[in-house]
Image (cartoon, rainbow, N blue to C red; front, side):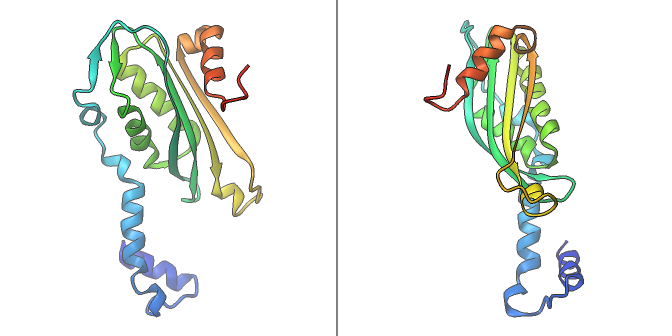
Length: 185
């Protein structure tokens, strides 16, 4: 990949042998491999033994999970917050596993819509809960830095499964609880 990056630098009109760019191909290679490391994560191993039998049957929410990904169309970053909820039915998951699942899917070339659905479907399949809700709010540099150049435009996507889709009260409770403090109805 380093040779490809060096060729890209040449195509851009740069001199890859100048001091500031000497290590750039190596750094870009390392960076891209990290930013796309989600392709190599086995979700079953990630969850490991962090599933627990429990009778808790109220909504579990992990909100404001920092999320960073690369847009598959331009390979530019998009980033923001991910909010995840599920309604347990006999199984709960270690709370740290939820952000790890978000990371596993966000560290791939992505579109926000697919990322939202992948997180929700993974939790639904892993936990078999009454339902799952996922909301992602993100800023896309492909819209901010180029194209329409709208610096403050956030994209919000949601995936509601099970009771989060079929029960308006459950969905409403989730959406209300993920609002910033002081703005809840």
